[in-house]
Length: 297
Image 1 (cartoon, one colour):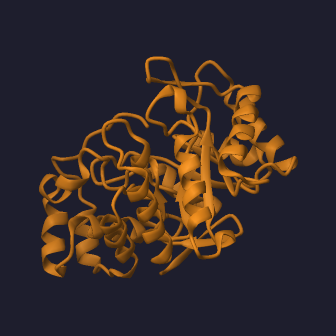
Image 2: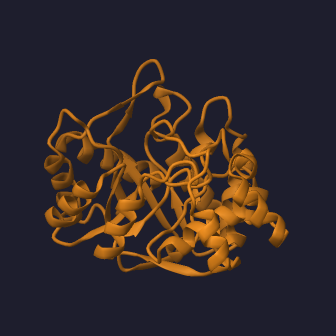
C-alpha cells in the first residue's frame, strides 16, 4: 500500500469511510460491518474516518464510533498503527434529521463523548464537521486549538470548508491544521480550489464521497463515460479508476471511500497500485454531463 501524510502521521493512501455502516435502511448487520473493517485493516488501510453524527437514529449518537472501536478491539493487528479520524459539530435532531452546532462549548463536549465512544485517551484526528452560520468560525476553530493544547486530540482538522476558512483555521491553529475533509468526486469538483490551498499549506485533503455517494457510486462508469472507458482498457472497475484519478490529483489527497462489504474495500485499496497515463488523466479531468452538486453530508 502506498502511503501519504496527515500532519506528522503516515497513513495508507486510501482510507476507509465508515459512515455507510450506520445509515438507517442501508446499514449491514454488525458482523458484516466488522468483517468489512477487518478486511480494510488486513489489506493495509491505516486510516478510518467516522463521526459522532453517523448514526441510524438521533437516539444513537456515536453509533459509528462505537462500531469502529469494537472492530479495532477485535482485530488481531496493531491498533496503534491505525489513525481514527472523527468529527464533531454536525448534530442529529429528534426527527433523525441533521443540524449544526459550532459553539466552543458544544464542540468540546462532543469531543469528550467521542473519546468515550472510541475508548481512547486522545483522538488521533478530530475535525470540525461543518460550519455553523450562527457561530463565528473563529470560535469553532479555537475550540479545536484548545483541545489540541489540552492533549485531548493529537491533530486537528476541518470539514466542508472553503479556501478562506482553511487559511483562517491554519492561522488560528498556529500552522497545525492537519486535514481538510470536503466532498470531491467526478460529479462534484467544486473543491478544486481547496485542494490547491491544501497542497500549498501542506495539509492533507480527504475527499468524502469520492465515488459520488452511496446512491451514485455503482453507476459511476455510466454517468461518467470516460471513467468507464478507462476502466475497460485496464480491466478494472470504474470505481478503482476514480480513486486512482483522485490520488493523481495531488500528493495531499487521501480518498476515504465508504464501504459496507469486504469486496468493496479490496477493490478500493487496489486503486493505490493503479497507474494512469497523462492522457487518461487529462480525459478523466474533463467536466462531463454527469457533473452536479450533491447534498451536504
